[in-house]
Image (cartoon, rainbow over all chains, first blue to last red; front, side):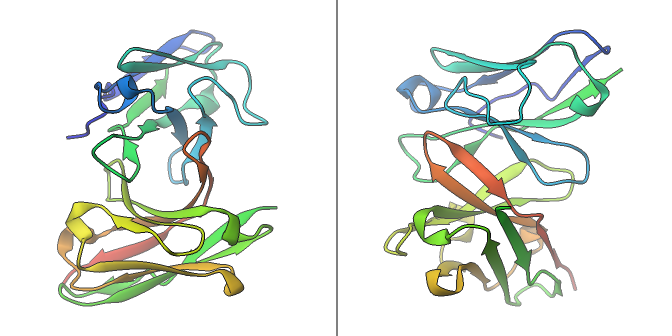
Length: 111
Length: 119
């Protein structure tokens, strides 16, 4: 069981808006550590989607946005497209760990 | 183009050893923390190990401590993962991953190499 909790699955129709939550604690997200998000389409390697809580790497459309408040973070996707399908992972750090901390992952289905 | 290419994955018996390699191209590894992240079949991502730019600091997830060793050769622009006493639950796709800093996350991932542990 991951220390960062994500919903196992979310779904939405093309054009709709979905959000994916990532809930941590005062020793990780709540301690001020950055939250990053990755997208992993089926059968491929993960790819950085959002970093430093709210920043998009070059090439990531502004349909994707991140937010963070207290011990939680969220990823919002607007104007859902078929290519957005796949698994999404949040990642942060923890006071008690020196390594990377991943959420359990959320499977996005585009209906 | 900045790329990481892993190699070395294969089928190994429980208790066996394997050495994974990760070769970088398009950039110098020497500027970055490097990580290994694994993904068991049908499961999520799990951080395995990391190594500082000059190799002076290393750390591991508890489940592999004492069995896995991460190393790097900046002259060869490569990172390695020596895996000993392999267990069935070590079976996974292993990704090499570049971490620019804690502020920027993992910005370059390899394509992964598959480790199967079975008798």
